Length: 147
Image (cartoon, rainbow, N blue to C red):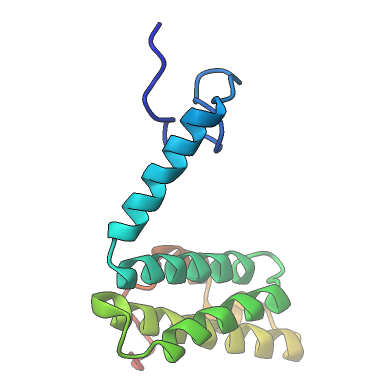
C-alpha cells in the first residue's frame, strides 16, 4: 500500500495518519518546509484574522461552560482585544466581523459577571440561546443594536 503524500486533516504532526507509524526526519522536514512556504504566501491579514477567530472561539468556550469560566474567558477576550484594537485598520476585510465578535464577547462577559454577582441565573440575563450565539462566531448578526 502506498504511503499518503500528506497526513489527513487533524493528524498529529510527525505521523503519517496511517496507524501510529512516525514519519522519518527527512519527510517531516519537507512537510514543515512546505507548511512554512504556504504560510509565507498567505496574506498576513488572513493569518492574523485566523488567530483572532481562534481566540474568539476559545473565549466562547469558556463563557459557555456551566458555570462560565469568566477568569479564563477574560484572558482570551483581552488577548483578542489586543489584536483587534492594536491592529485597527490593518486586519483587512475581516476587521469589522472581528470587532463585532469582540464587542459581543465583552458584552456577554459583563452580563454573565453581573448575573453571577447578583446571584441570578445566567440564562435570565443573556438568555438560553447565548451558547448558540457564541457558537455562531463573530460573523453572526448582533441583536444588541450596538454593532
